[in-house]
Length: 271
Image (cartoon, rainbow, N blue to C red; front, side, top):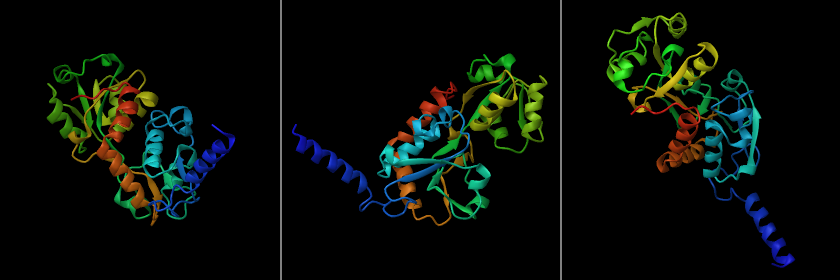
């Protein structure tokens, strides 16, 4: 290939990158023309981001961010990462990012101050097992024989009773802190939490415990749903929603979830 042709090819590639948004739904709607600025926590934790390095694209939310960016027409090198605290991000007012992923649950109160994208994740119920029963098989028959605890009045109770139907009545507590304290004291063998909470409790709070399985999100009547956070009134929202809808329809989001929240964490899906 001649030097002139190589130069022309390189120039065409640069021009395509610079003009990626021409006629595109993101055109003129980002903080920086031709770039997408995405925020996450500081630090950002496994399994949402691996090694506190979202730019690697490794970890569930890092991978989702790049998939959405690509669907919107942004090349990976057109994505810029910044950091923000959780509390700072959910406050009203101008933002220094286009999108923010930090396991933000979509709630009515928050939607009065900021905008959220369509959900990119619905948190399933997961089983946190004490160290003494961490090797329990995840068959329903084996799970029924455990001593269960749950926070009364939450969605965990009907899921537990309808899906597992324990052999003995579960012990009910006033809040999740009491449930975890009961597990630490050896009063219960297992409990149901949403997967993000279960992973946190296993890693930080209940020593020796293990998240041994998760149920499909549709087993829960009102699963906790995560959305990408944006400044209120952000014109980019429709473009982001369309990207997430497309990734959902093609099964790409499900693939990312399976890779990072089942395979990587070792938390199998209980069907």
